[in-house]
Amino acid sequence: MGTNARTSKSIKVVTRGDVGASQTATPISDTFAITEDGSKNFIVDVDVSSVTVGGGISIALEDTSNGFTSSEVKSKTTAITADGTVSLSFLAELAGDQTNLPLRSDARIVITTGAGSAVTIDEIRVVQGQ
Image 1: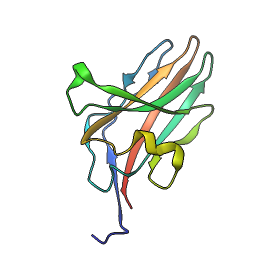
Image 2: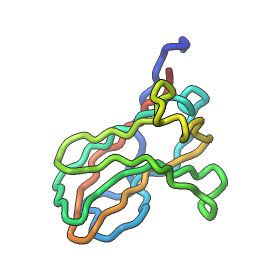
Image 3: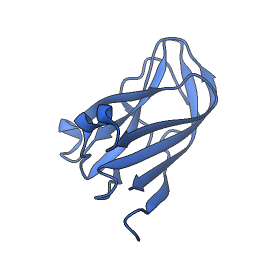
Image 4: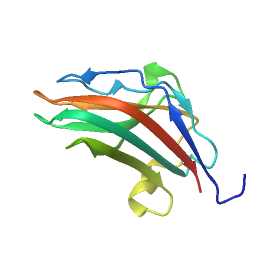
């Protein structure tokens, strides 16, 4: 693969159906490996449907490299406000992302929902590379 190549991979969704209200950093994907290129340029697309925004819904990346007991949820999140595709990215060229980079070797996607919120997670796609 060339230095400007991106690799795309759909990852298994742990939660099918509605994710209910009042969840905090609940995993919605299996743990997956982050490549060397992905540690500096990483995008995740999450297809969602049946969105009910009560107290808010957001996704984040949880670093699980040191095991689940000492995992770290990254401070950057993406809000889910309607059906469709939402993206969460960590890109080296964005100054605001640099405090979260480089990403470590293993991660998973987590969701936080407020009171009265619900969403269906349909698919998660991870893109890693330059």
